[in-house]
Amino acid sequence: MISIEDITLAYRNIKPVVHHTPLLTSRWMNEQCGSQVFFKAENFQRIGAFKIRGAYNKILSLSPEEKRRGIVAHSSGNHAQGVALAARLLYVKAVVVMPKNSPHIKVEATQSYGAEVVFCEDSSDDRERVAAALQKEFGYAMVPPFDDDKIIAGQGTVMVEVAEELDSLDYLFVPVGGGGLISGCAVAARHYFPGIRIIGVETEPANDGQQSFRKKEIVRIAPPATIADGMRTQSVGRRNFEIIMKYVDDMVTVTDAQVIDMMRLLMQRMKIIVEPTGAVAPAAAFRHGINGSGKNICAIISGGNVEPSLLKQWL
Image 1: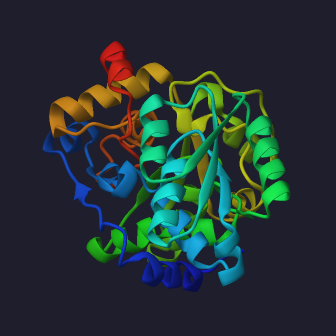
Image 2: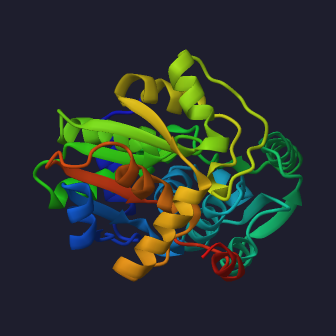
């Protein structure tokens, strides 16, 4: 299991290439919640999402021989872009396996950063199978989306930045797909804010993490039909689950409709565009019973890469 030392080392590794994203606030949101709410805006990160943090930390750690052979990854979107940009910055060839239903804007961005995109069917099983086959055939190094110590440590650097700006924090809401972001952030948050309550958030159709948390064993579900494409993973990773069970206090869900409502609120009240997965944690902070507590709350906006045509349709 990773430690805070792993995360602070990752932060030193990635700090020259990532943005220190802002903590945003809204007077209207504070009044509605009866608390001070901070939004960690990773939609302003390079590639429009937090994923560059873990991808860069992982690829940087590879041996010279592994970098020479190139890397392969699989992703529905934001990890694909993070890997593609990190590989370009480190002069490493990248091949990324993406489901056929990945948002077009994310596919285009991945290709624009120089990665080769190989399409697969829509399930997590298929993209893992295709990536493994490419790894075996060409000798590529695998850059997993979440179940990897270097990836987890890189994602945890989000909370290093939060701790640089806040002296106290009572609640942390984090979106959960495969579990990379919440596991890294949970380790860091527990170090910097020992009394904090850490809440993982999924959409209702993609509640494999919540089911796993309740049953205390990893639950695998069918490919979930949710607008939050970052949550279309079918289970959390093994490493991620161990950290979740040790540090996370609860796992909750929101509906796709509540996610759309939050996307609209963030656009109207704060003038920012957020993708569905990025609106999941703010929706939970707004909906799940913290109202009137007078606490300091942080919700992580994980990304802002939303297809314009879909955004128009939803809003």
